Image (cartoon, rainbow over all chains, first blue to last red):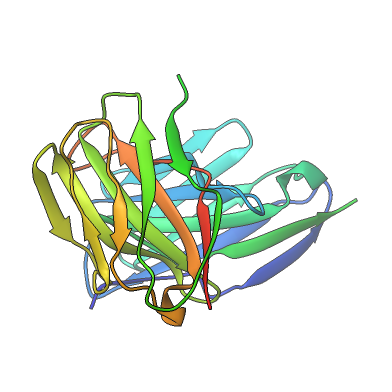
Length: 109
Length: 113
């Protein structure tokens, strides 16, 4: 069955560094991938969408890549801040979205 | 705009009881869906709807019913609650029926004793 995997459950980085989160997909070829941010006790909030024919997309300090050969998306936060601490979810699919289990990012001051 | 509104935020049920989780959106979105989120499992799709009068099953539909009589509302019914249905439930909507970002509600935390 189609699967979205985020292998890192947690990631700690120092403030100011670049955080890189990984998302892999198996058993299907999503037309696009999406990234969401989720804070404790809140619903996920959409951040970025990247289509399979786009190699890279940027929004302020965020950058997402889509590598169809590796079946992988990388999500980068540059110049990270403590306020970036949250769980980040990767999602893929067509009509319906399948979500990974998320990576909990902690940015240490 | 209120976005996606879910009620109640918290609920405790006894095994075998029934209840309805309410979801309403004021963005005129065609697509609405229900997910459950469990530790280590991520968000899993329960049911979805691509418009009023149309519903379909997701990954984990057993034990849940839905209906979509209006564009705005998409209630999720638990017919006979079981402890395995203890979870956080999220309603989400989007403008398009086949693509686009999802707008999530704040969640409903359900405990079944």
